[in-house]
Length: 300
Length: 159
Image 1 (cartoon, each protein chain N blue to C red):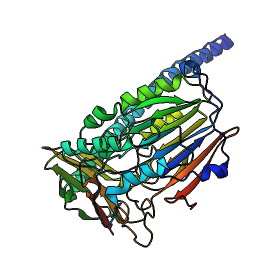
Image 2 (cartoon, chains in turn green, yellow):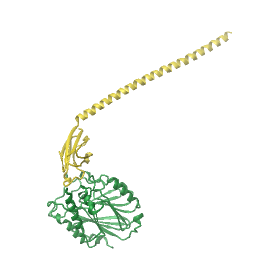
Image 3 (cartoon, chains in turn orange, purple):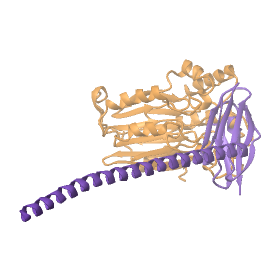
Image 4 (cartoon, chains in turn yellow, green):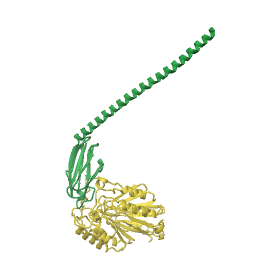
């Protein structure tokens, strides 16, 4: 692949488009994979909330998932893989309905041209049944994978209704990190923010500080997450955290209003607050350029 | 002979003075020790008495504070708290008594540093003394279902 920044920004889609210049520096079994030096990008889609209904918030709710898939399939340059960062479905108290929504979502995702599609749960998918239905359909809620020299870690901070990663997963993460060199390129996916973005709205991970403590010795770590349905950027030390926009409804800026209710649909500006983000990463020096784009590909 | 007697007399006087000095000094030291011991004993008694008085005062303050504590009972159920607007006075101790009517909920008023789990079939108490005036939101921070995001309220602290 050889695309410049301008070409890259033409890759209009929904969710976050992430471009990675992949010069990995991994060790052990991961390093043994001999990472290639070619660049790649992937698409991050977040908070699709399949099953949500609320005409005042999104009158096009039943069509949104199809629209997203159509737009991603229309990308001029198809990504290496697509990552859904949680809240695939909207919450329901009915176990059977939850499973139905997850099945429908999974079937819809099969329509994506790109066949390497990865998922993680949000609390709407997994927080009421300990991820039972999610696991049955999508597998484990936390896992790692490697792609062209970059090590991806999917951390589940949504299945526990208390918004914790938990000791067991922390131990697993610690063991995984120990295999890596300190300058390994590491991408973390979570659903919730790992830092205290706004605990009064539950926009945090209760034991997120422990995760960050484990990540801190590694010099090339970046975190992509969802949950807050808006663009947000934050640094904890040298670790950057980037929230993706949602694909069903936007939420207000943290603390800007008394309640975190969805922002009503604006007929004069449909899809306002829903959009996608390009992140261009360069390895020498390690750098990430982020461009926010609207639903139609316009630069915001 | 006269000189010898004089010398003897002087020597005797010196010995006598030495003995008297030694005995007197010893007696004086003994007396001094007794005085110090007595003073120390007296101080210890006074310190004990002071401690006793402070303890009694503290106990009285605790009892007084407990008597002045305002108890607020809050019922939690999907997806509301009753009441969900609470007004308290700055400096007046408060006890929040939570009961869940259905399942596990949470209570998190992060700006006042108050958080607890609210398990069902059990009363949960949280004590605090409001120190700052204002209106502070609280939420259920344990994901509990369809309208979890609506399960919230406010604590208002007045002067």
